[in-house]
Image (spheres, one colour):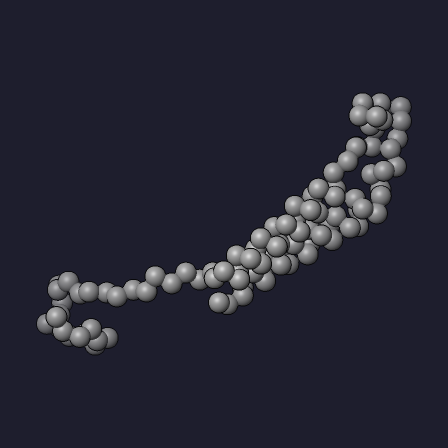
Length: 98
């Protein structure tokens, strides 16, 4: 078999050519590690956001009461910050070269 070159000739038209293709995957082990870290930040952010809604008292819906816990620092500041950090880590993990 002849050596593969990048030159094309009219005599080669219609012949099967052997194409060597490296099976390289874009993401390496570091990329996947960063993706898992970002996913963990996102999951923790959503878990921090969980809690009773505005009209829940002792786990039961009560339209005559108001729960100020929905405006806690944990639910409106820290949890969204974790989620945004997680998405930023995901972007970094995708764009990072091997």
